Image 1 (tube, rainbow, N blue to C red):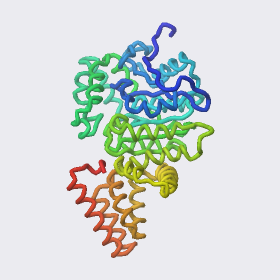
Image 2 (image 1 turned 30 degrees about the vertical axis):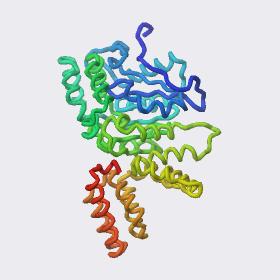
Image 3 (image 1 turned 60 degrees about the vertical axis):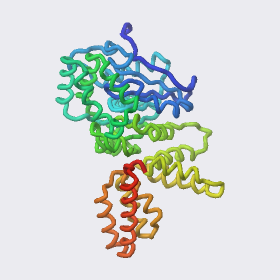
Image 4 (image 1 turned 120 degrees about the vertical axis):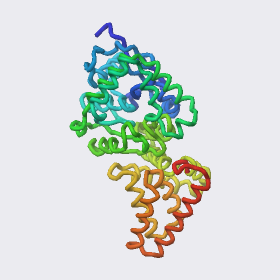
Length: 404
């Protein structure tokens, strides 16, 4: 143990931490490196000491950080212990933790088995069980036999939405290059870890405040996996991010950063509404889009500032962030209420939000048809007219529904 190297890491942000503001450790997904967090770091490093690490065989971490590289030998407990070894070496006793995919599962395991070490937890595009173990065992064998090239060739479709993959974003190429450069033995060992993970029956033991974040277009760890986590972890909050796949932290860094800042805010002397305001801003951007929120902020005056702050804290920070209903259901309820009360200007805005939250145009049509029975035909008639105009505007602008 004494001769085994530590996980390669980088420290950003504040030089010192204390009990009210623990360090924040960030874990990556399999196949990526710590660069996964590059666009998020500036927003959170001003408030936290941030430690991000590379998985075994990835980035700057050698594969022999693990106790064994034999096929099938590695477990999530071994990987979690490697993170604890790093924390111990840095003199960190208690920390906040956020991780993507496999990195998120490490945090989940720690919150279950080493709760004294985890102050607060964020699980991003992850799962309590990553599908059929045979899938990961087969991938481990493929990589041991042929290297990471075959996996890298198919990774873009799993990691990114079609639009982002086609955008030529430098970070997408850099992460795919990281995957191609990963040590096959370390990558395969991480596959073995994923094959053995099943934390579903233990989620109820998590006491740390937990935020679950999901990409609405994630095919690797779909929304159902995130909802299972949020439903089983006591008092967990769920954020569903539109126009994002498995690496939502890369595709939507602003939304993820806002959500993490709000979740990990812990200054005892801060305005008690600050955390709710930040959480509300993140939810508002996720549902209505950056362009809408930026316009609202730009149009805020001294006369409307208090009202805007109230809406952000109360409607978005306290209601839209609650875990009891998913975003699709909240949109359905909101559309119905707006039709019932004739708030058609707000209806147009929330129709766009409903599309961002994953409701299809056909489902919206069914909701509006239902309102004809329970809210009245004239109200539904006006609502259909508003919806038709919103859809026409979207089709005519060339924007995707999640860009509005």
